[in-house]
Image 1 (cartoon, one colour):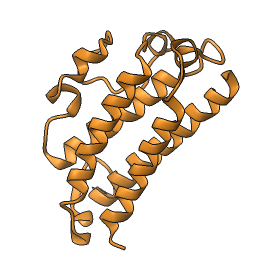
Image 2 (tube, one colour):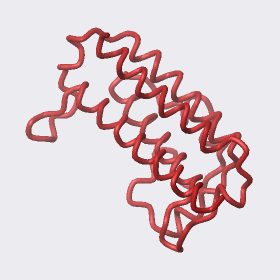
Image 3 (cartoon, helix red, strand yellow):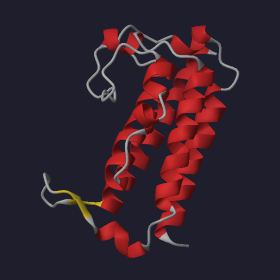
Length: 166
């Protein structure tokens, strides 16, 4: 198996879990939070999708799906188009009031772009330096694994919150 095929499988597992967590959820459970400072399922899925969209589009060299395909407007959130949710306050987490259907749609669109990009890669591509701000500099392979890991953690958190609230 090639590295890009492994990453496609990993991101596809995240997509499957996004569907599993969101399908059939009503807005009450979707936006509920176990405590005032905890993240909701809606925020967790929105955030993991925004991070994937932001980071993969950057290394792929294309515009984010969030803006290119009008998802920023469709989601209707009060945040700047570039906002990924990093360092959001509890108040900002509470502002993510988006339906499961829209979250699934946005995630599927981002997933499609991620897979298209990954399909273009050969194993040698993963050594390309994509961020020189770190020591050592970040390679494409490390960046993509970081995104997949972040996505897996957040969808696991969303599944846990669903279990607590359902």
